[in-house]
Length: 129
Image 1 (tube, rainbow, N blue to C red):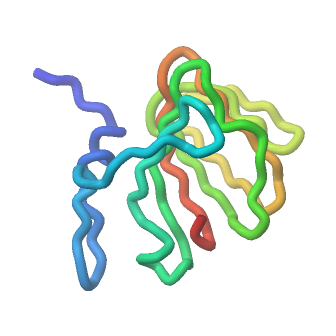
Image 2: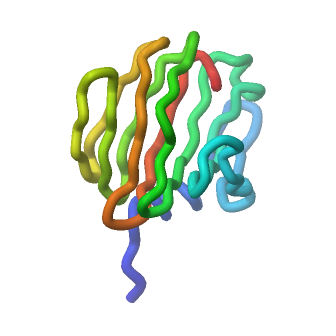
């Protein structure tokens, strides 16, 4: 029997809107333009919510990171769904594993580092990224 991971549920889910359905299996992963070893899959795009919010699976390869950055207007909510790492949030450095969540207000610098194995995060942005 194949071991199931929670990230597989998100990677293969359906996103249901009042007027349409999106099959996540048919949504492509793409490499982050600024951070090597970081890949994203858009589950909910800003263009589908009038720019109100977006939701993405983020995969950070072992030993790679989403480097220090901030967002001018977006609140960000990150949920670790598989793997472990270090989250630097302002002045705090937090070692974490699956199950941890992080709230990042606009303008607060943050970094996410994958340790041990590939790290998967469900990232939500309000307004949309």
